[in-house]
View 1 (spheres, rainbow, N blue to C red):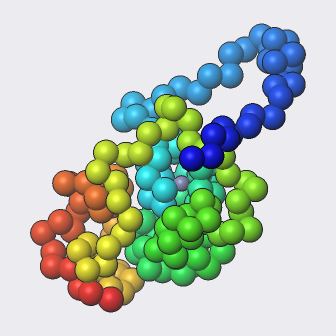
View 2: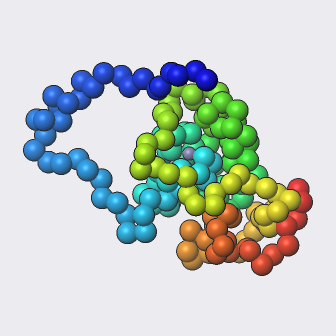
View 3: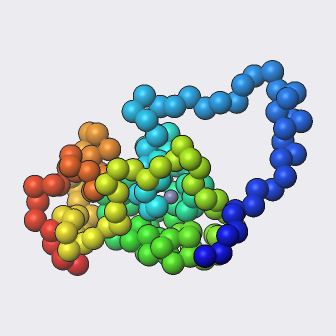
Length: 157
Ligand SMILES: [Zn+2]
């Protein structure tokens, strides 16, 4: 009902950009942009890159992608599951990070089929394993048909 559009801060960058000889366009990675597992939007250019999502402020963490219940890693003790809940409620991984996020851009769609973690449905490992992660880290995306543990039974937390 409210008609307020997100307001852009006035673009003072245009003058600066005009002075740049080099284009600043970022190359789209071969496999396309990778989704942020917290908000689902396609924002990351590569895994293991430590990038932070502009839409929800989640920092890419292959460990927490594999173990979304783990409260360790670069996200300040926040598990991916907690971050997803907070994003639904506050629009950011934590309420205090709301000022660091922005609405998704038109070229940052939600990854097809993305949905939040559902431990009753998704067969995540219940403990940190000594097994190596899958060779193709993109198979850690639990919402995709090629999720590496698709054949396992979910163990309800
Ligand atoms: Zn995100």
